[in-house]
Amino acid sequence: MIEVRKFDSLGKANHGWLDANFHFSFAGYHDPARVHWGKLRVWNDDIIAAKSGFPPHPHSDMEIITYVRKGAITHKDSLGNLGRTEAGDVQVMSAGTGITHAEYNVDDEDTHSFQLWILPDRGGHQPSWGTKTFPKDGRAGRFDVLASGRDGDVEALRINADARVLGATIAAGETVEYDLGGRKGYLVPATGRVEIDGEIAEARDGVAIADIAMLRVKALDDAEVVLVDTA
Image 1 (cartoon, rainbow, N blue to C red):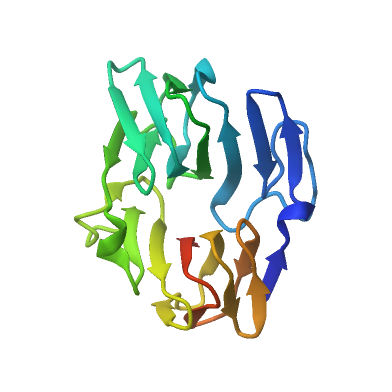
Image 2: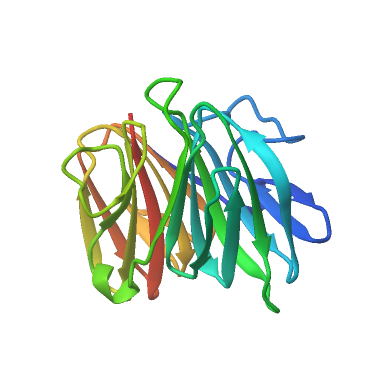
């Protein structure tokens, strides 16, 4: 099953400093057909204005992954962590038993990001935060694992969930494959257009995938895609 969810059909909220687009029900947007996809609970497509951001606020028992598409985000939390994540890179915050954090765009250009929330395997994990640089050239023409709950993915950022977050850059006309094994997948092109089993998704569209063993993604333009593989 493949369902393309066009960008224009997403939930919307524009607060001036934040232009948010919701793939799943979030805040004041609710669609009973789009509450979650497997363990994937939130996929927000955010544009954060220069010199603005999210002030300190708490979370618990959620794995929160931020993929920066353009610009940078600066993170600060109650554990004493302070860090910056730039375009093409990823940060992971395991909220666990509780954490308070702030996310700011301290630069002079807008920050474009995907923020993903994945339900953890259980409650009560120790909270943590980490960020990692993933050079785009390193995942050209293939899916690289950015964050994962699988023990074998030693190079990826750790999440406490039966899920993987993957990224790929694909040249126009080329196809990349991923063994989804019948699990659920949710894919969003950050840039470019892609085709999956005859269905075409443009930049920032969502693609809900189920009951497919081998996922094949063909780039119609030079494309950058993010994929969640989840139970």
